[in-house]
Length: 261
Image (cartoon, rainbow, N blue to C red; front, side, top):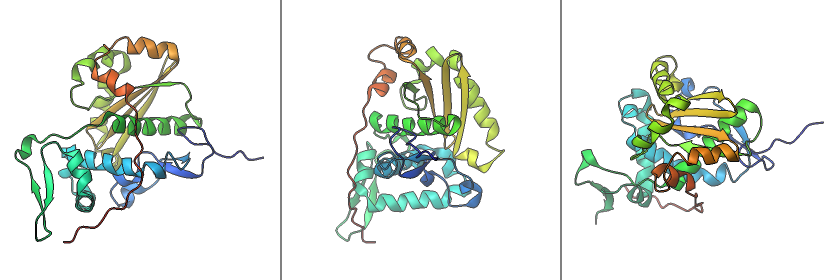
């Protein structure tokens, strides 16, 4: 008797499969796409979040300096740029002080008053849900089950979080994972896109993730009592607290008009 697979995120019946992390992050080359991680998923936690996956890819490509220096990512970067030209509104919502505008002759131009110091809008709800999906996907792939208790995320690479990380750095081996990530970059091409580590510390499970060699986040899988103990280490107005309290808002799929070139 076979049992129907259930979704890695919500434990509902699975109707599809989801790549962890999303397939769109990887260059279109066999050395990157061979044997990617995948988990069973419902439609809501795969296809219905494709808009989020595209926005997060724009963010990661935009802020990750190392991939712009790597020839393996040249076509992927150009693909993201072309997608931006088809969806100008997403870029303009994403960038704080840059705008793509359409001239009278229908050509597009980038307005950026201070390119080197350009900033982006960080929507906690987007980043939190994106990280949750990856962390829970890794958990499901590792343990063959859907996590149903508590998950606290340390979004290390986001702006303004540095001081708060010192509270948990030593206890959960954050710096050790960063050091290991740097050492692994020359061992396998996929490490440039995605690295992770799963560690059991007492009753905790800690999953560390790095995307694009620069975007680090950490998931602490725990029960309600331990979750409260961790939360107590941060003040109510801490950005770490705000991040974990954020709620993702689903965006309905939209038709994006192509821009005349």
